[in-house]
Image 1 (cartoon, rainbow, N blue to C red):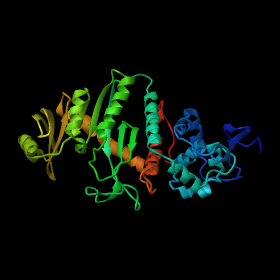
Image 2: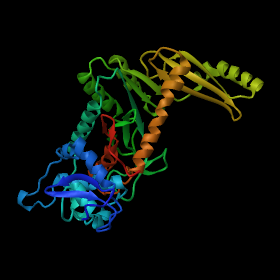
Image 3: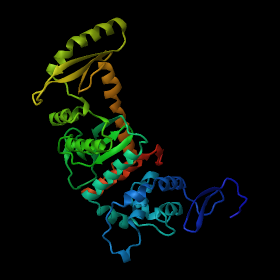
Length: 382
């Protein structure tokens, strides 16, 4: 190589070899950005730590591709936009990807990676989630004063006759119903579920585990549970009350709730007719559903605009200005939908394996690049 070449970029070496980037040709790759991904991963030791939770049952003397190598290969390829195992038929020979994985020869083939995915199980899924939570905790230099845990479910259409396939009446298709939990822009849980069940299924147990985990590390942290009306379940609200967890949860409108807000809606309509501008009025009142064992505070939003009237309700344990609680706190959960969309951009819906647990692995692979440490983000395909 000509040492006088300008604009040469030097990366951390591999074994006794240097890694240089220039514009002089040679073996060309369209995925040179993966070297930046490799450098970030080496700094965080991310794939090194996560790959330790996988159990390798193969005979040691016959292993050509380690768990860590295959995990890196699969994860890096997804980050570059290669979502299918078949892509690795040519990716395994790509020099940039080989270097990023830490090898100088051919990487694992699609069948080898398929066997790797099919060895995934429930225990490994739990351990990966533990690593995700450890990484979240380590992202704080000081104990946080407050954590807001956002829960939401989304549809994941299936691709064939897969394990636990089911029709969902709300989404009107055969799909899975994964549950995601975020704290701001950090993913904490990515949990695959069948769709023929309540959308809040297991959310209560997950909330309990998260709260206990965080309070063990940060005893004084305040925790808020935030979700839409699909998670307004009396058992979850009761648990929050008993364990001093605040909540801001949507609640479906009914005749009693609408009656309590009717006069406020009338006021909003009058002002709208006078000004021609959209009006939003807020009112709180005490309400108890039949399944609740005590009354709770409900905040209603009465909106009137050129399309007519609109009523929305939330149930909350918070005190303060109704508009601020609704607009500044509850409506912030809408950002979580953007986070889920970003998961889809990283192919979280590529759950096309016949078996259940490999599909759980795939949504975790898509989610792992949301993890950050000390505000250093691992790069994605975008």
